[in-house]
Image (cartoon, rainbow, N blue to C red; front, side):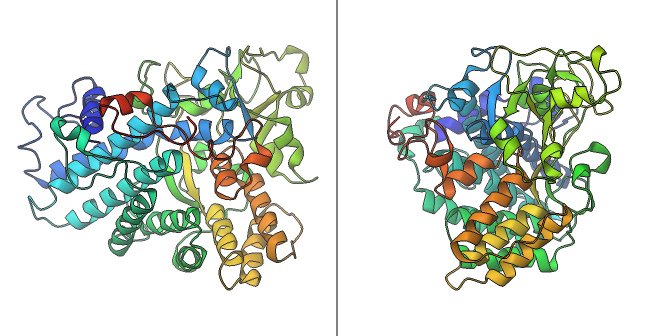
Length: 493
């Protein structure tokens, strides 16, 4: 693990608090006057380090891709099958330990862990008012980064509150995922005890985030009784509610609405390049999801990645407004326009379904600076209140003493918002109804693959999925090599 943190630091300008080409992460002025060992001398240093720890949340766009493309919801798309080849391998369930996208997931999340550990290693160096809030947010961020790692890779090296020297690399082994989850829960419990339900700084994490992520982590471990208790707290005590119009959930103009629990903040005010997607301040997903060579109203042109399937589109019940809010049928949209004959677009060679991700897509009026394929200001919603309601519904339904009445009440709130009829089932049928509701409520948001895996439905729903293998992604081979081969690979890779 040690070699990983050091290598990640080097790759992403993280080795010290000096960032050269990545100095935007921590704005030190003048540059090159402080190093890692004489940092944390003022409260501002802690604030800047925390901002640096937040910055790795920018990588969330990749979970929107993999969480959908690995599932039955989307195909990889793009210009060709060799363009972002790793996504096509994941789409076809042919991915192995040499996959750039999976390596990015591994590196970027460990970069986030390392930045948090740097803060925690120095948490006692200085006392000042508000430090407890900084430490709590740092712990919450670490829990999120480790949660991403464990849900992708299972057993992962667990390093807490320290940076490691290169000589220790072969001494660090993969930690059983149960122990990683225990650390995640510990960090989230500590964070929730300190943080308030709201934070005056836009994008900063809160008690609601800590509790919601804790409930989700428990759900992934099938700890339904505990999950129900914690998720009920979010519902009963938190300041959250469903907004009236489902179609308003993902627009820039409506950011910060009552349904938002955990948003990753993006800005369209700074450019970037394909050479370092993690360096972007904008959200890369909407541009990559955009309509290739599109010339027409409402939308902007893009790269036609992560294209929803006809199966997803047709799975919605008649009258469910979430279908068109989630999935854009491009030909039907064009046909409905008064100047349809003048609207054109192109199909990419990487696969074309005719459908586009209508939640995270480039729209006119939401376009950042050049290259605007990379600089969307659209935030990524990691957790929203509807997700919490459905997780709580599942937890109550699957608890040791099921409470289907409460599960149905939560399910009804979600369906009432989109004018869908009430569900009255119970037991295992209600479980399936809740899972189906998650599909339709959360489609195109990056949850589907992981929902299918944790609920045991993946082999049935995903073409090419091999039970005993594809529940986890492979540890990147380059990371195994950096340890001198001391880490085992996940089964059947």
